[in-house]
Figure 1 (cartoon, helix red, strand yellow):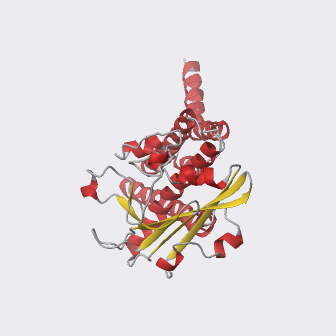
Figure 2 (figure 1 turned 120 degrees about the vertical axis):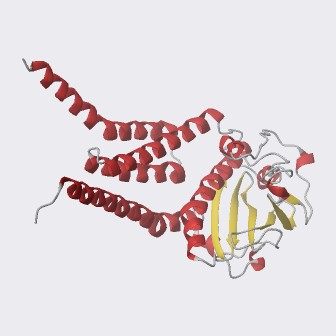
Figure 3 (figure 1 turned 180 degrees about the horizontal axis):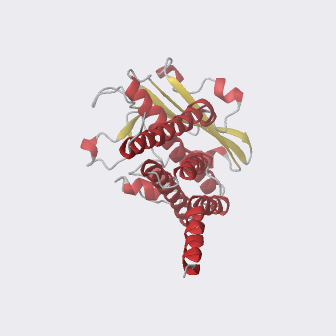
Length: 318
C-alpha cells in the first residue's frame, strides 16, 4: 500500500499530537500523584497535620490541607501581622504584582497598625475591592481567638453565589518559645461534585492558591523577623515563571507543526517540570534564573547550531 505525501503528513501530525498529549498527561500525573500530596502539607509536621485546630468542626468532612512555617519572632508579633490581612487592611503579603494584575488593587503596608488589627465574628476578609466581582470577593470571620486564631468561612467551587460558605480558611499562631512561633494555615472545603470541577480545582486552582499562600506565609515571616522580602526578588521570580511558561507553550506549538519536534518535545517536558519547581518550590532567583537560561539554551541552541552549520556549508559551495 502506497502512502501519499498528504497521508504521511497527516500521520506524522497525529503522531506528534499524540506524543504531546501523552507528555502532558505524564506531567499532570506527576503533579497529582507526587507534588500535590507534598504541597497539601507543606512545612507541617505529622502532629500538626493530625491535630485539631479552631474551625475544624465547621467543615468536618471536607478535604483538608495544612501548611506551616517556623518564625523567629514572638507569637503576639506574628499574630499582629496576620491580623492585618485583607485588601482593605494591610494586603496579603504575597505576590502583589499578580494580585494587582487580577484587579485586586492590593495595598502594601509594611508596618504594624493597631487600627488594621481589629476583628469581630462576622467581619469580612476582603480579597477584592468591595465594588468589584459584584461584592462577593470576601471570606467571613467565623471564629476569633485574640492572639491565637482567625477562622474564616471560605467559598469553594460547589458554592453558588450568595450561598453560605462550605469551607474554612484558618490562621493559627502557636508560641514555641519566647522569640519563636509557628504559623499554621489550614484550608478545608467540600469535594467538587463533577469531573470538570475536580480537574480545574486540582490542576489549576490548588497549585495557584498554594503558590500565593506560600509566598504570603513567607511574607509574614519576613516582616515579623524584620527582613521583608524585596519587591525586586518578587519581580525576578515572576519573570522566571513567565519565561518558563512561554517556553512551555512555544515548545508545544513547535511540536505540533513539526519543527524538530522530538527535541522540542523534550523541551516541553523540561519546561513543564521547571515551571512546577519555580512556582511551587519557589527557589531563590539566584537559582531559578540560571535554570531558566539553561532551559532556553536547551530549547533553542540546537536550531541555532544547525542553522550555523548550514550557513557555513552554503558558503563553501561554488
